[in-house]
Amino acid sequence: MAHSNDEIRGVLIQAGEHRLLLPNATVAEVLTRAPVEPIADMPDWLPGRIDWHGWPVPLVAFGRLSGNANEPVALNSKIVVLKALSGDKDRPYFALLTPSFPRLVSVPRDGLLADATEEALPVGVKVRVLLGDEAAVLPDLEVVETMIGEALASAA
Image 1 (cartoon, helix red, strand yellow):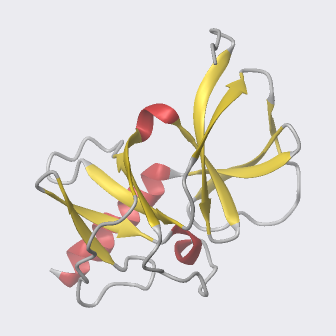
Image 2: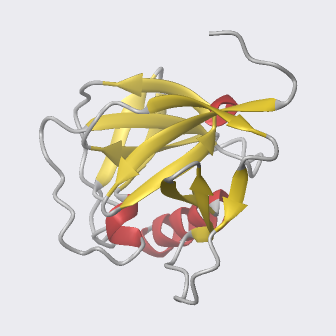
């Protein structure tokens, strides 16, 4: 499928009740399975870390982080490894749990509309959007990275 300069490549990831829309360039790899090493004294949205190419990568259950405490962490969950935006040399990646494979989408530059609902935004969400007739959220990855750093620092 060809895409023009009028489109941005994105990835839709299911996380709890939310469908996250991420720039394709932030996705480093999608894993079908990886052993999760629990980390003591972490909030429930940070169930552990995975070893990915020699990096200890924190694993985030975004649904839990954004307020859906019942999001299961299932054995058949997929793991989406993301490039961190913070530039932290010690933690250049973090990962998100998802129950299904991410879906690649082409987003027309003028086809992404902010959702004008009056509801308060969940933690870690920058804005609600409509992509055609599909509702999604743009996660605030910088806030998520900050929360990961604070949680790991408090347990150290």
